[in-house]
Length: 95
Image 1 (tube, rainbow, N blue to C red):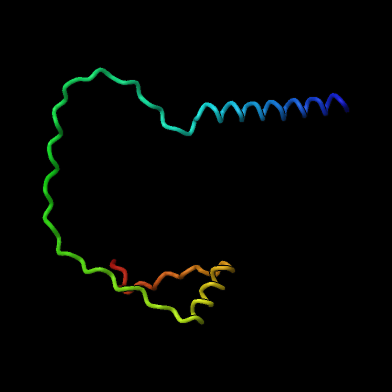
Image 2 (cartoon, rainbow, N blue to C red; image 1 turned 120 degrees about the vertical axis):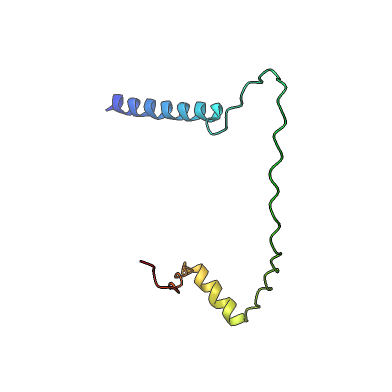
């Protein structure tokens, strides 16, 4: 029995050590490439100019909610009832 407890404790300690080592190795950070010798490179060509589209008017300001509507929205958010159903399709599918 005592041997089993020691084996379990040793396994837990090994897992904790492995976690501590993996945290210090920074596996989640991108690898930095070694500096390569600088070679004269041609400048990239400028991007082609795109025609300017007509300016889009700014969106209208948000509608002020009444205190009752705000309370309804707050209660719905607190209980997780904020899923919005998608609008039905407005056009018939093309075949």
